[in-house]
Length: 209
Image 1 (cartoon, helix red, strand yellow):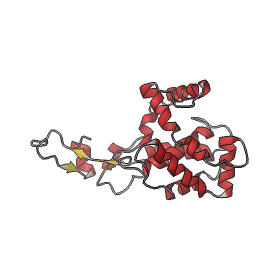
Image 2 (tube, one colour):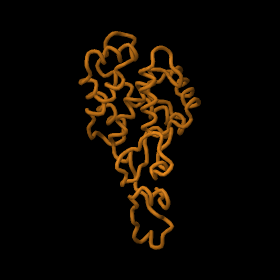
Image 3 (cartoon, helix red, strand yellow):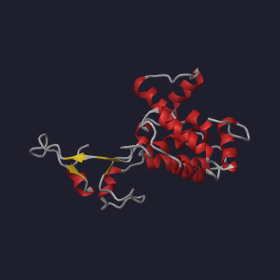
Image 4 (cartoon, one colour):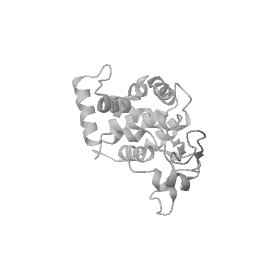
């Protein structure tokens, strides 16, 4: 599927502030994005999501919370509303194959970071301490590579990859999914007057979230 990068770009450009981290926010983002997809992208997504040549209204909205539902299944044992036994088994299999997928939703860069570093991160770059193979950027890259790979893919299916992209693009546009505040909690006077550490070098050395 050669439209994956284009889909990601469209999703990114059409996000908005909507209900914080909750399901309705992800669903709203997905609905707006679907309305702005090209006919070619809609057809490609229709084949993946519905095995048809078109995309039904609300199709992206319907998969927007899947990755959160999978995480809730692993962490809390919850079954999402409307899930069939096959859906539960799929979630259990996904969690078994990707036990760190709960980390895919964010990357905790210090507030002073200018940008996400190039991969691989040089040893001397302080941002190396804050990124990793299970952060949101790497998860998105992996999902896009799966969508752009012809035929059967390793890691997870193209259907699951679409669910991942739709959800994580929403995550990176919501507060505190790409950055966080760091503090030296062991510093004298921290409780009385905490001072945030924005500099990546200092945050890597002294910082605690």
